Structure formats: C-alpha cells, structure tokens
Amino acid sequence: MDPLHRVALAERPAPPDDDPAWWRRAVIYQIYPRSFADGDGDGIGDLAGARRHLGYLAELGVDAIWFTPWYASPLADGGYDVADYRAIHPELGTLAEAEALIAEALALGIRTIVDIVPNHVSREHAWFRAALAAEPGSPERARFWFRDGAGPDGSVMPTAWTSPFAGPTWSRETRPDGTPGQWYLHLFSADQPDLDWDHPDVRREHEDVLRFWFDRGVGGVRIDSAALLVKDRALPEVPDAPGPGEHPHQDRDDLHDIYRGWRAVADSYPGTRVLVGELWLPDTERFVAYLRPDEMHTAFNFDFLARPWARDELRASIAQTLAAHAPVGAPSTWVLSNHDVTRPVTRYGRADSSFAFARKRTGVPTDLALGTHRARAAALLTAALPGSLYLYQGDELGLPEVEDLPERLRRDPMHERSGGVDPGREGCRVPLPWSGDAPPFGFSPEGARAEPWLPQPADWRSLTVEAQLADPDSLLQLYRAALARRRDDADLVGDDLHWLDLGPELLAFRRGRAFACLTNFARVPQPLPAGELLLASERLVDGELPPDSTAWIRLADPALAEP
Ligand code: GLC
Ligand code: MG
Image (cartoon, rainbow, N blue to C red; front, side, top):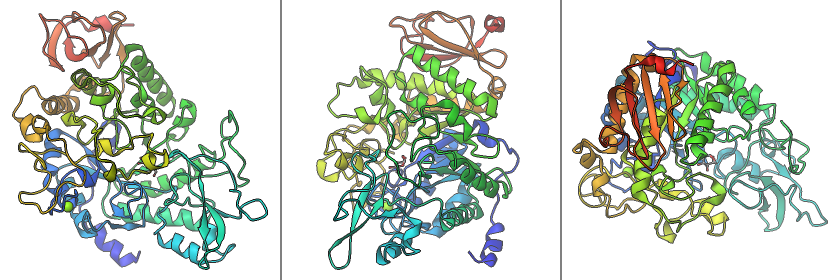
C-alpha cells in the first residue's frame, strides 16, 4: 500500500488506549455478517445492517465484535474462501462502510476483530488464477502445493491425507487442452487451495494484510485454521499416532515463527492489537505454546465447547484450562459455540450433549426446553469465569439450531463432501430475528424485496430481540445483566478462581473476596450458601437453586472458600 494513504489513515480515531489489557477479560461478540442484519433489503445481512445495530451490542455490554470473513469471495465455504483480503464482498458493502463501521463501533467503546484466513485462498484469488494459467515448476505455482501425481499416468494423488471436510485433500487441474495436469493441495474443499508458507511472498503478503486492517483501526485478528499452515515438505502420510510436532500438516514447530512475526506487526501499532487463534489441538501443552508472550494473545477454548453438560466434565475442563494457561501468563477464553457448531440450546437438550464434528447428525431427539434451561445456566457459568468470553450471535437470544432447512439451500461443503451424512453448518447461521410476529422478523427493512437468504422458522416470534427486551425473564435480559455485573463487579476483575466444595452435584467457585457462582447439576433443587442473591438463571424454589440452573451470590461468609 502506498505510504501516503497510510498517513491519511493514521488520522482516523485510534482505539481507546486507556486499557492496554482490554482483551484479557473482554466479551467478544461474533458476527456472521450475512445473518446478522440486512440493511438494503436483499435478504442478505450486510455492513449497513450491522452499523444500525451497534447500539444493541453496546447495550448488550460487549467489548469487541469479531466479523467472520467479510471479504470478496465466491462463498464456496461461507466466505472462508477469500478472493481478495482487502476488498469487502459487494453483497455486504464497501471498504468505506467497513471503515465507518470500525470507527462508529470504537466511538461506542467496541473494538472490531477481523478474520484472517492464512491457510488457503479461494480458487478465484489472483495468485491461484495465475498459478493455474502458468506451467508446472513456474514461480506462480510455487506459492501453492502443486505436485505431479504418481503412477504411469500421474493419476495417484501425492498423499492420502483426509480433509476435516471429509474426502481427499488433492484435486487435479484440467489443462486448457482438456488433459489432466498437476495436483494441488487443499486441506479443506477443492475451492480452497492451500498456500505454501515456506514461500517468502506468502509471509510478506499476510503481514501486509494485517497492516492493511490495523491501519483501519481494527483491534485484532482472528486467525483461521491457525495450526495447519505449515506442512512437512516431504509429504509423508499421517502416522497412526503422531508424536508432538510429527503430524505432517498440523501443529508443526515452524508455525511459532510465523506468529512471532505477526505479533511483531501487531505490537508495532498503538493500543493492543490482539491475535486470537483458532487452534483445535488435543494437547493442552502444545496449545498454550502458541500463547507465549511473543506469539498470540489468546486462542479459542474448544475443549470447553466440546464438553457435555456434566458437572465433572465442565469442572475438569475449567481446571485444566486454568492450569495450562497459568505458566504462559495468557488468559483463558470461554466459548460455548460459533458458526461451525451446534447451537447450545439444541446441543444441551440432547442425551449426548457433547460436541464433535464427526457425530453431527439430524433427527436426534432434542428437548429444547431442557436445552434452554441449561444454556441459561451455561451463560452465567461462563460469564463468571476469569478470562475472555465469546458470544456467538443469536446465542444471547437462545436460538435453536435450525435442522429442517430445505436441501436446495444447503451449500456447506461439510454437508456435500460427507455425501449428505453431515447436516452441514447452516443450521446455526439462520438470519437473526429482531422484531415482529413473522419472518423476516425485522432482519430486513420493512417492504424488503427479498426473503432472508436462509428461511427463519415461523415460530421465532417469542425469540426476537423486541420480544425479549419486553420480558424481564428472557435470556437476552439475563445476558445483559450478567455482562454488566461481570464488567463492574470488583470481585471479578482478577484472574483468580477458588473451587467451593458443596457436594458432588454443584459446580461452585468463588471469585475475588466473596463472589460465588453455583450451578446445579442435580435433578432436585439444592440449598445455597448464605449470602445475597445477585443473579440467577431461573427463579429460586423456596430459596433453593432449581436443577440445570446457575446462581451468582455474594457470600455472607467468604471464609467458606478458604482452602
Ligand atoms: C475454520 C472456520 C470454518 C471454515 C474452515 C476453513 O474452521 O471456522 O468455518 O470452514 O476454517 O477455512
Ligand atoms: Mg443486504
């Protein structure tokens, strides 16, 4: 980018620099822009819609918003196939609107986090188009993983690695004369060719993309598929039980150097610009290695997200998370869901309430009333934990997963590539209900020319923002009250957590001097320790905490928690 342009941008409002540690206990709201709010009436959420609802987010009490990719893209994977990292998708708006949005959010004290997708680009990205147009062995192809196939006619793909989207990870190009040519690697779909991170252009370009967005005032970046970028150049098969750093395309040691470079870029800006990693790694030690002081700031806690609604499971996850983060000095994150997984209200309403991509199916019996009680309890439980909190749009409204979307609208490669076995991820991406009694529930402006791009269930009337603002017992009101207290309560500012032993069916801990959070996993109400009730996810029954609910109290006797 030309330096003059950068000078002009530097005059834009900088993030509020009053708190360089803002990210350590921030509440970050995830926006899936196509489904948040539609400003121009085409049935697709956009930046105009998001700008209109910034006040809603300020009142909800969030510190930052993370936008899933808003860039130019053919949308082969919901925007995670980026054609141009410096351009906004025309259906969502313009770069000028994104800049305005970032500034308007900042004026409300809300930072913006953008999604950076470094592992792969879209087939439509200029680099990949140039690579396909060029010959084998050309510099254009060297930014990707083009390889000849094995066998006499080159028809055997270079490795048998399988994709997280099911199926093979190599596709063969068709040459202009119609003959098959080289294979290229794509850990995800064939529309998402992987970049070769050993290539200096790839590194330079991504650091420049970071600067492009930091120059526009963003408070941080979410790093997509952050553990996958580096590959073993020898392209071996995946061993049965790879030891630390031995997997050919996951969690390789050279990744750390890449993120040290990114951290240096982030640290060269005023205020704290954060790096948030998407790292699905089973080994917590390997996971927290990415959070050393000169690497990422935080990473999503998928262990917690995947746990079932069970006291010992959640307690173990919290304890392990805190213990693993302590040595690197990074705060934990708490995540109940995102745009890839089953909505909590639905997941917690099932006999098996854990999450795993491999087990996602439709038609599983679900008790939504039970799931809603648990999601309410989980909201208070997670909001009471030390560290930062992620809230996926619509979870504050208790939206269920939409499982009966028409087949013709399902475009998720997870669905297609599984041969229809995996229902796909659109069920948690249905446009939000804002107001009114019928679709589009205020998602699009009155008199809009098009219907929402994914149909909303007709019975979402009681789940709209409007309906929930009018109901003091709604989940939205519970979230607003919880986030306000989380921000202001002096007992919640530290990083401490002290377990309270109140029997095998209560998950209970103290924060600060006398704040206690208690969740009841028993089938019957449980007595609470003496104190002042601050907030509860359900009404108490004769002074006792009902099943599947959480209470926040100020303990009358803080000594209760002494070790
Ligand atoms: C991440 C994203 C997911 C996307 C994948 C490939 O897991 O969260 O939505 O499909 O990366 O980019
Ligand atoms: Mg629109």
